[in-house]
Image 1 (cartoon, rainbow, N blue to C red):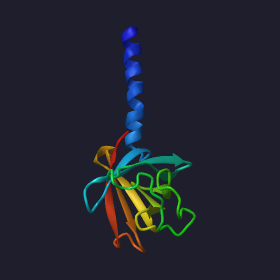
Image 2 (cartoon, helix red, strand yellow):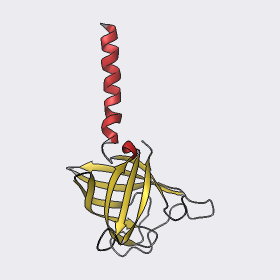
Image 3 (cartoon, rainbow, N blue to C red):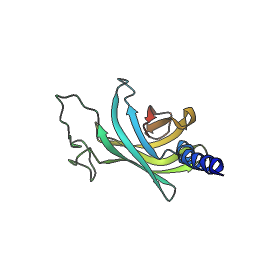
Image 4 (tube, rainbow, N blue to C red):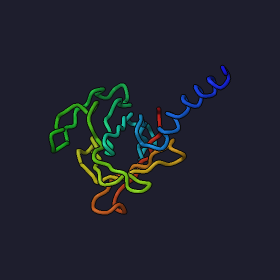
Length: 146
């Protein structure tokens, strides 16, 4: 009987990890598509089927401002700290993708339409920001941290 309880406990501990890999919810390291270096950790949460992403940590050189503000933002985020800022919003599941949302690039203050999808069994996230149509944009690959 103890053996069955042990198997049940093991199965239950694996279930959250498996469920997590089927959803973009979690902590992600975004990799700059131009330099290949990590830029930030973003926490994606899901509420009522809508994804939102906030910056939890920035990877910055020692000589850079460790708590920069979004000086180039033109909306309510102008001059607000980038750390803790919501940069992904309103993404909703559409088949294998999440679409209809927006992504902010804090470096230039611009807001782009966005879509994303899981890759590599949920270990990676392909994030695309674009103007107008998805063909006119750029993609980043984010790596799951947890």
